[in-house]
Image (cartoon, rainbow, N blue to C red; front, side, top):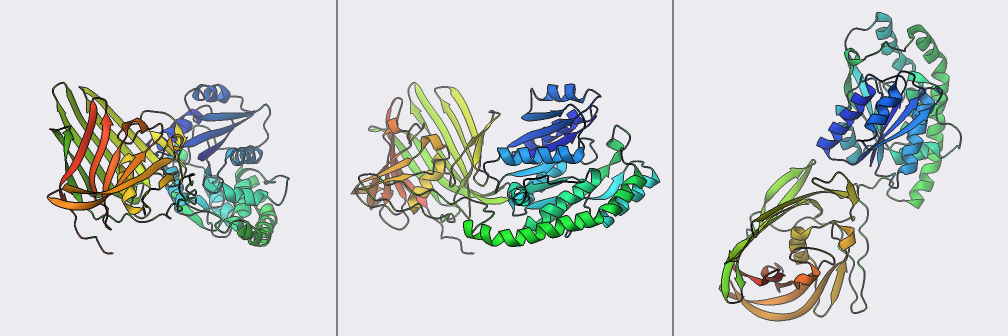
Length: 509
């Protein structure tokens, strides 16, 4: 979850535009987010503007009857984000002003850096567009130099992203206030308290768009410069205190959690049943199947040939900056009054065999259906296209098409029943695999020794639904080719039998 924290005071002209721009960013970037806004005693109609946007955005508004200041508002929002988060090691907060000086478009880069391992990302102003008084430019140039924070050149922008565990560590030593200054100085104080707890700090260049500001600046140049000069000892002390406490707390934290900021949670253990002892789910592994592996099946309904199916490792792709293996399963056919054309497509991480995207396109009896799911294993949720909400997923998610390949990689013993908590919709777990028997089958002009398994997705739909009574014949060799697949459809039982296959040699790095 991403919590966008926006302190607001008399920003009726721009507050709504900023919030809507945030929505556009995360609609395109596809991350789950919440807007947390503090209306700090506004008197210009800002409250009415925010109220209208609360009906259409995931927005929480904190209202102060009287103005308490920027620092109090900012700290209240950050504490609220930390209170709401149940995954502070993954979730992050972004602080953003409501005057449109900094564009929310930079947030996608900030989040990407957090997801790649940063604990703190600071937007640093490297240029300014629009006319400003020379005194303002002078003070904006020199204030960061007076309020120095290690690893950061622009300490007063106030536009930053932080992993919430970093905030929790900064708040841990004391129950009192985090910030004791205000305005630009409070931005520097916040960084001074956060940086010592951040294992990695990144900076991001941005342009200050003063031509977008719809009100006169509230900065009083010479008073701000004088206050910054006087605040230097306090900022240095805040940084030194945080550094000392971080050094004292880090060994304790390391003992409690040897991986302070994991990108991926450990997979849950596989549940053993009363009929079998089940080995644990394998650790994340690369996809072992070579690009270009292709299996073609004839589809039969009783003695009648009713269609054809293809299962293939179609290629590689990139989703959200990660390399994917693209898997496709296509079946088409029919007879008389019935026709089915269905394609299941899956994109799984090449390095970890976890689903990131799953689509189904079905045309059945003249009716068409399309479903698409975006799956975010590192953030712990999935999103269905056309549904304006997110739902939790499991640590090592698989979809229906991915499961057809993953099941070929696990050891299976005759007579045992396995349960895996890996289906990307948690309410349909466990995925059950019953190893029923061994037998010889003749397909693709050859005789194979085969293992017959029955896969079951409780409460699921499609070929592995419980009522489908699906069975899979796997070759009893290291390749574990899918030799045949049988499943019940609404009109009867369809059996897919391998008629030709092509398996390129595995790629070597």
